[in-house]
Length: 89
View 1 (cartoon, rainbow, N blue to C red):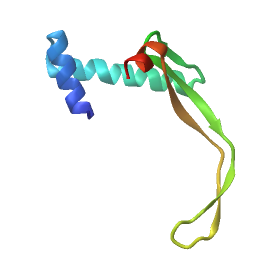
View 2: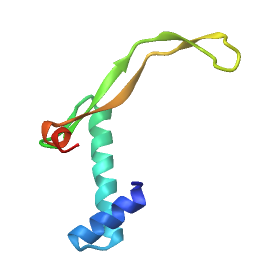
View 3: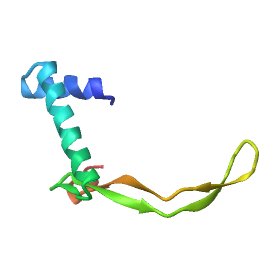
View 4: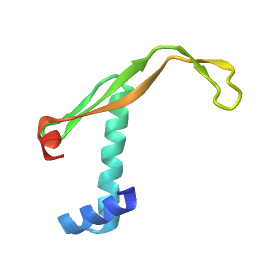
C-alpha cells in the first residue's frame, strides 16, 4: 500500500475528503519525525513503537569494485511492532 492508497482508505473509513485525510496523515508523519529528531520515541499502544537507533561506523565493500570503504556512524529510524499487531500477523 502506498501513501495515495492509504489516504483513500482513511478517507473512506472515516468519511472525510481525501484532502482532509492527507492533512491528517501528513500531520502524523510530521509529529513522529519531529519527536524522533528530538531524541524521543513514539509509542502507539497495540500498534508499535517508533524510535531512533544508532549505528556504529564500520567497514564495507563497494559491490562493483570490491574496494573497501568506510561507512560513517549514523542514526536510523526503527519500528518495533506491538504485541497486538504482531499477534495479527
